[in-house]
Image (cartoon, rainbow, N blue to C red; front, top):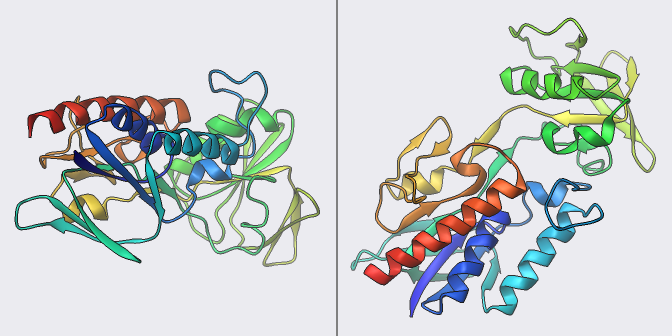
Length: 288
């Protein structure tokens, strides 16, 4: 039986694991260093098959249980090294172990950078979000803010402008050269802390001033976990792993799927990527 390593336990990685496990030709191991962006999503109601909203955390747990039922092995540990063995297999070292594999799927997502601001972690899923497309619906008619100073922040703010009562861009002391629509307010003062009781209710600035908001969207950039791909010699461009139509990288036996290859950063797209990658990995494994 062939051995497959999937790096990342989000929707792309777990989706691929289901197809690989059901193929009966692959022993599948999924390794990750913790919860990704989906686990931070408070509610999801734009995903097929759920009559009521479901939390990102619960959706992930459901997916993991389904994969475990099929025999997929999950390891929660930090991947410290990934390279080649003498016989050109892939050797992975992680905290607590080491193993070799016939093929690798990189499904690490895209890291949403969180600035070091008091309260930001406390309110994740309770007013702090990392995806305007995902969560704008929950803030319709409300006052929101976006933390960031580049084009990504402008994109998120513009998305929110379609549903929110007001949108304020907070650069957290950073200068910005982006041209804002007239309806988007701008505050360049450094952010001291986020406040609220059960949910976020205000942002306090370094100068002592504050604004009331129902939501804060973090948009200080996205960065795919491309170091793993570079270690293997896989092509990377603009923070994304380059793959062909079969989700294969330019290194034999290395595939990538989900947010780390770019495109629409949505659960449905990640699941689709994972399914296609899994099927193509099965074809690859049958040929080696």
